[in-house]
Every structure is written in C-alpha cells, then in structure tokens.
Length: 331
Image 1 (cartoon, helix red, strand yellow):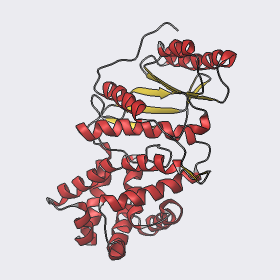
Image 2: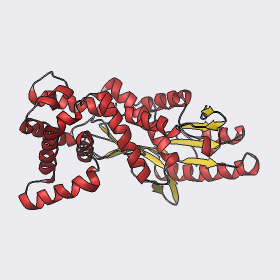
Image 3: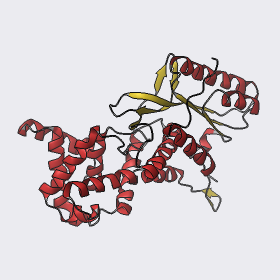
Image 4: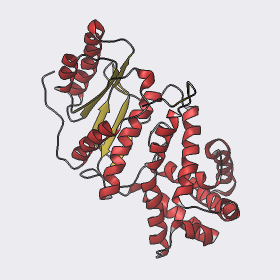
C-alpha cells in the first residue's frame, strides 16, 4: 500500500521509503573507508573510534589513501539523491564532507579552490587537509561517526540533493532499485563479478534518436566499458487498447536501436501503466533481457516491491557473474 490514511487524510511519506533504501546502499562505502583507514594505520579499531582519536595528520593521511585508490578494481559506490554514482574522487570528498560540513559543493568547494590557488597544493591534498581539520575541530560536537548516525546524515544529504534535481522522480526509483541490486552483489562478494568497476550514468543515454533513461556502465580494470545495462522507462496514464499498441511500438523502436547499435548491451525495460495488455507485454518480454511491469498509474509508482526487487537482484547477479549474455534477436 502506498497510502497511509488517518482521519480520512493520506499522510504517507513515500519519498522517505526511497531515500532510506538509497541511503542503505551507501553502507558498503562506509565499510570500505573503515577498511582503508585500518590498512593505512595497521589497526583493527573501528572507523568511529579512529575519527574520534586520530590526529589531524593521521586522518589526512588516511583520507589521501582513500583518494589514491581510484584506479583499484571493485570499489564501492556513492551517489546523489537520484541514484547517479559519483566518480571515486568526488565520492571520497562528499563522504567525509557529509560527516562534518553542510553544503560541501556550494560553500566548502569554493574555499578549497582558494586554498589551491594560494598554496599550490593539489585539489585532493587541499580537500584532505580541510576535511581532516574540520573533523578534528568539530568531532566533539558531532559525538559519533558510527554507521547508524551517518545513515541519518546521508538520508538528509540525499533529500537535499533530490530537491535540487527536478524531473527525475521515476528515474530515481529505477536507479535506486538497480543500485540496490548491484550493492547486494557487492556486499556478498566484495567485487563486481567478471567486471572490475561499475558506474551508474548521470544522464540519459542516446542511441540514434532513442533515449534510455537509466544506464549502468560495466567496465574492466582499465576503466574501459565492456558492456552496459540500458533501461528505458515508459509510463502512461491511459489504459490498454490502441494506446497499449502505440506504447509498445515506441518501446520496441528504442530497443531495436539498442540491439542494432549496441548488441553487447543488456536491455531492461520498466513499464508503469494500469491494465497493460498481456499480449503487448509478452512481445516486449521476448525482446529484452529483463522486464518489469508495474500495474499502477505513474503517480502511484514510488518503489520496487520486494518481489520485483528480488527478480532484479537475480538478474543483476547473473549479469555480474557472467551467467547470462545479452539476447540475440532479429531486429
């Protein structure tokens, strides 16, 4: 149920459901930072305790070690409020900034740019020194850097990010579901299977004249894209009939362009429409590698349910471990 009725009024906070699911996917990055601190210091102490007790120079050294891992395979993801993954350097910056400073992009970043101009150090060095200094100065005020507290901070940061990015509601739900599937695999295996890196693209991908709302780049250890997961998202308020056929024709046009120009990519279609035609659904299903159909109107679409999330998790698992390959079909 997407509603929460009290005295005849719907007070549901559906956005919170999506934001909390998205924030939970940041936990692998938190644990990776903890592991990097431990390795750098040859310690088994928790990140919470290390951030509360280390000197500024020690914290700076560990932050630099996090930045320096950018070219390593199997790095976890951090992302914005609509589920678009950051580059590794930006992920490190935002992670530590979120712990201790508001508005890292709007307020702190310009200050760091001035530090670089004045001192001549690199941007990464200036960020690490600034972040370490802030942590030491304000850690008594923050009191805790445990995951449960950081999770609440990340929810708040993601909500602010989402408010600033307009018109991406449906894409963010699908990105969150894809991210959850990828992170589930990473959490279990500490890697991305046959791939070394993944990146959820910031913007739509165009193939010919067709657009794909969400895409995931699957890369090798050198950062070269090996394959992609391409996702067109189709939503319609109208029900069935001729609209269903026209809708299917639009989807098939996009899928056909992808199969022709990018035969090595996986195709996932997400349809959000009330009372969709079973015949049209099966037409699409035969063409794609994975299909998810939500029998709801677009304004009721707020999350992947457990069943559809589980199906997507299994599909992504099979992609990452190389158990399946993109379908070969006649276009």
